[in-house]
Each structure stands twice: as C-alpha cells, then as structure tokens.
Image (cartoon, rainbow, N blue to C red; front, side, top):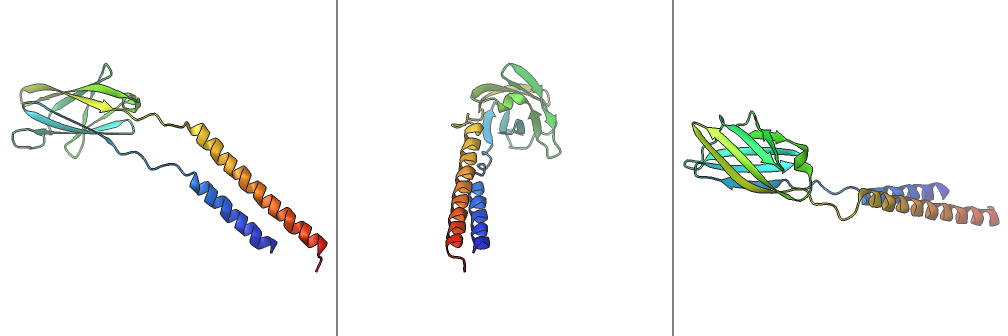
Amino acid sequence: MTRGFAALCAAALAIAGSAAAPAAPAAPVRVEAHSEHYRLVALVRDGAMQLHVSRRLDNAPVTDAVVAVTLRGKTHAATADADGGYSVDSPDLRLPGSAAVVFKIAADGVDESLDGTIQGPVAPHESTSSGSARQLGWWVLNFAVCIGFLALIARRNKRNPS
C-alpha cells in the first residue's frame, strides 16, 4: 500500500510541476507601411524583424533594394534573405512600448521613406521570480501532504501489525 501511495504522490508532483509550465510564445508584431511606390510588411519576433517589400503598382517583390531601418534613433542596415525578403536583428526590438520606425528603401533609382509604428513586447504582469516562488510553494505543499499521508500510514501499520 505504501508503494501505491508513493506513486500517487509522484503523479501529483508531476501534475503540479506541469501546471506551472510557461505560456506559449507571443504572436509576432506586424508593422505595415506604404508610400507612392512601395508597400512594406514587417514581422517582429524575438529581437528580429523580417521585412517584405513589394511594388505598389503590381505587387511584385522588390528583391534588389537597399533597405535601412531607423528605430529608437539608431539606423540598422537590413540584410537580404534567400527568400527575397530582408531581415534586421537588434536588441532595440526587444524593448517594451511603442516606437516610431522609419524604413528607407532605395531600388531602381527610387528612394523613399516609409513611416510606421512598432509595438514592443508588453511588460509581464508578474515577474518570473513570483512565478518561481509560486511553483516552489506548490512543491512544498505537495511534499508536506505526501509526508503527512505516509506518516499516517506508518502510524496505522504500527498500531495494527498484521
């Protein structure tokens, strides 16, 4: 009977540990901007921005442009990706709050600036340390309950040796 109870306690601890699992990753932030000649869509996730530039006239992708992104006062050159898009990696993309962003596109003799706004990650309502403290509290509670039940079973077996 003690072995079955120990297995039950282990299962309860496993369930308590999985209940405090982290949430799914947030969806990427989408930024759209357009000018007379270009349309730009950018997706921001985990400090990286993926850019897709197309011509407004025929919606054809612009794969041979020089693209620069100005964010929070710093200009970052975009690198061309194999899929025809562009990418920018910057720690400024991880900062919370909204910020103005300027995309400068130069292709086929046309230079234009496109303005947009990026919404940085939202500050969490709880810090990760409180989540860890909560998880630790659940572990302590579960261990205390298991030890209490094991003590009751041992006491019962001591009174009734069969």
